[in-house]
Structure formats: C-alpha cells, structure tokens
Length: 175
Image (tube, rainbow, N blue to C red):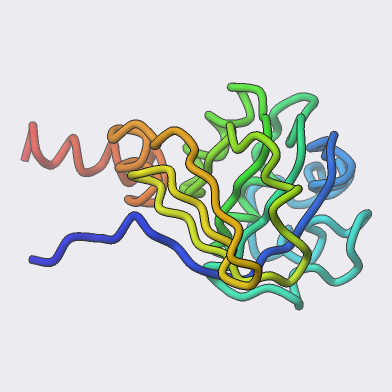
C-alpha cells in the first residue's frame, strides 16, 4: 500500500488580515439558511471579498491569508465550504478554535505561517510539505521553513477530518 503524500501543490488565492468567519469567509445569513449543506454554502464562500470565488478555484488550490484568519465565533460553515472545494489553507495566524474547526472539517492547513503573505501574489503556484513545514513559491522561487504539523493532526487532516478519523479508530478497536 502506498503512503499518502504530505506535500501539496496548487494555485495561491491570497487574502489579507482579519478574515472574519461570519462576514468575509461565509456571510452569517447562509449559516442560517443552509446550516449543514456544503453544496449550497460553496457559492457563498468569500463572496464579500471575491465575487464568484468558488468558480476560480480547483481542488488542491491554496487559500493563503494573513493574521487572524477566521476570527469571531467559530461557526463551521465556512470551513465546510473550504473542505467541499478541497482547498488547502495557510495563514499567518488563527485562533485555536478556528484551527480545530478547520481540522475537524478535513482541511489540510497550517496556522502559523508567519509573513507568508509577503512570499506570495494572488495566482502564484505554491507548494507546502506539511510533514516537514517546507513552503515554496514555485512562481517566484521564494521559500520558507515553518514548523511541521504534528503527526496526529496531519493524519486527521489527511483522513478528511474528525468523523473519518473516529470511524477508523472505532473499526480498529471494536470491529
């Protein structure tokens, strides 16, 4: 059986600081209208910042954001839409409650990529190895070394989040 790679490569979609979860990531009204319907949430992801964002991305693309990503109350709908689009997330900082929500949703992400926004432009091709913490901007040649993601967190992300991880654990211990 082959091992799953911890290295991802995709196009960068750059956002700034203070991307509040209930406005800039996913407007609150859609959390009420479509609380757990990722298909209906996807078209509204980042709509207050980038019109038709979901039409501009491909699976494996990177959302790269500045400080304080997903600030505010950690509602899961924005993370559900990011996960449904199979996007990778790198940000300069994010509260642990948001990070926990991202991991639980199955988003492969890193929340301590200090000054990453200075290394990228919107549209650049980038690469991140989450097991080693090595980031490379393929377009410009810039690179940086961040902390590696802890193996247990990375395993959960790679499995698709909390539910698949718990299912695998249950099968291992009780089936």
